[in-house]
Image 1 (cartoon, rainbow, N blue to C red):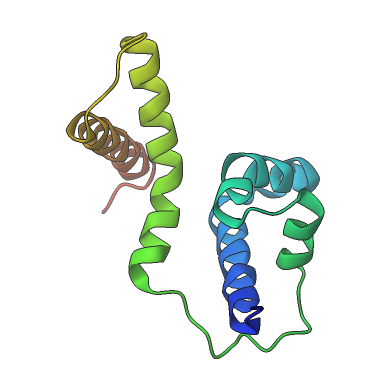
Image 2 (image 1 turned 135 degrees about the vertical axis):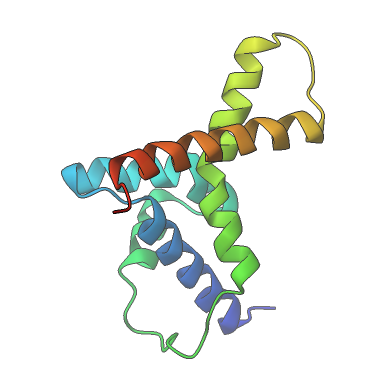
Length: 123
């Protein structure tokens, strides 16, 4: 059974992915990158459908808001991807525990916080 609200949530999720990971330098390449890394798996759509979701204006979705834990999870996708890649390179042909992934992700978040802190010193 088709539920129109499901489509609205998917549109909202696609737009949030773009808001978090979009870089203006090459908009087409960035949208493709966002789709390839995250949109394909989270939304289960084609690239053209993902682009339609991003540019969707015909549905009234202003009243819908993603829960804060979903927004936080979207923000953690990139650090988790980097952490998984680091672990894959460090521990070839072995599996990792959730604790190892979490620790590596925290390391990445701390590195990013230090870089941002050093770039914007407080007076």
